[in-house]
Image (cartoon, rainbow, N blue to C red; front, side):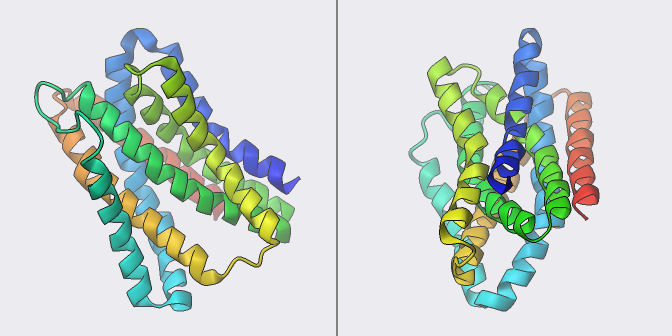
Length: 243
């Protein structure tokens, strides 16, 4: 039962992808809105979810390791940034190549983060089924704009590439649950804390160095405002349900 619910929590990424498919004739507008949603969602995730978790993690693994692994997450994406083609955000490629770049980096960061979330969902479910289900619903809500963003930014890629990236993000939550199932809850606290810290660093990089500049350069302010409001709203709903 725990693995099934963990798997269903990850499927929300496909809901976001489905929204993009249904609005394919307005891809550019939906892409701008979804990127703004992702900015708000990731920023909210940092404030309401990741940072509080890191405070608890710091008590277990220590501040130096927490800060070091967070920095490692940022540095990892800076290095990967050099190997992803067509990534410079300019007026010419703002709506195409840079969007693909953001989608790929965001997918990588979310895979790491969702693995940790999957581990958390499985653990909560093991202690209390009702609390675990509520927590899983919260996880699902803030994954929807992520699915929208990833699928929309990969719109110019082949069907095989889009499917592979989307499925990797979708199944990463289940993978986290499988890790906890295999280890029977005996994963060292330092390992979970280090993984969460790396994910935090990656999300910081995506939020402030990739998504924020993209949204600022978007000329349609109304689309950006709508996306930001929706993104904050979805994560706020997840926090309230998960609380």
